[in-house]
Length: 344
Image (cartoon, rainbow, N blue to C red; front, top):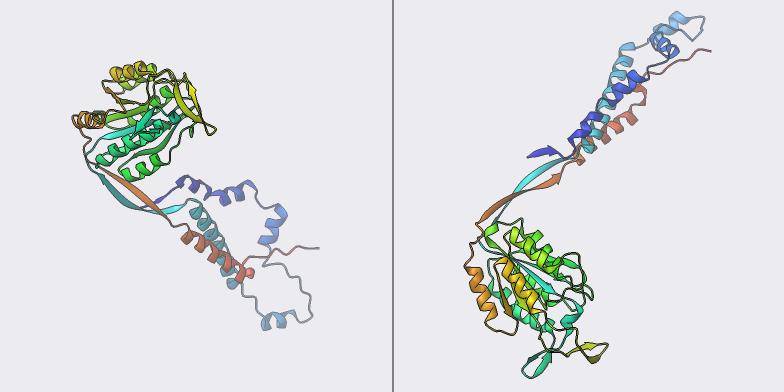
């Protein structure tokens, strides 16, 4: 399919005619053009013989003037057509299979470096537990569209909803604590996830939130964002990461320190899940992923969708080439334009 990307540029086509009427020739120039064929400027005693030997070929001058005007018009039309950006649109159809729309919101604040988990007798950070939990979950979601949000002091979309779950897995593996700032914008993360999911069909909007319940930054309160999710029919399944012990070890500047401000706030996380009709789980529970998968499987899948996009191929080279040929013609035939002969 052919189209002009900027068709409004066609209004420039009559500009030369408008300029000719806006700035007409001066009277002396008009008289010179009218009397050009009548004025004799060469004085010779045998003028009749000279004119007979070298006759004035006026038709050739008239034809030359017509060719010159035609080349000028062709040059202008070619330039304007190139500015209008002609392009050929090739349709491309993408068909997506039925599935769920799952947005993962992962806490990447400084508290995710806390060492309050033990795996096979070795202390591990909360972030390591999150990567293990979500890694297994992503592998099981074949056919689902998965997106990834990370949040610290601010929230960022690391990956939009995509069927390429391996790409999401690689992005998740590269996340480290404090990559999004030292604070925790829990409410902003929920609001951002709702914003990205509200464009999808309402039957399969799922946000999986992985956090420790703390909220120390951002413009949205967690409960306020949860109410917003309920209004847009987004279900939030929450995975709590952390412990409730008073002193929690964390590595800071290569030294293990014990802090009392890293305790997980389970009450906030449970309230978020309750408001949106989801559920709350602990990251240490091996059955959490199976339960979330079962809950998600009970939802209605998004129907298969066919989306057609048009890929443009620019064609401006053709009218631009035509304009260049017209310009070349004007350079090859410079005498095609009538010359004004001025008197003394």
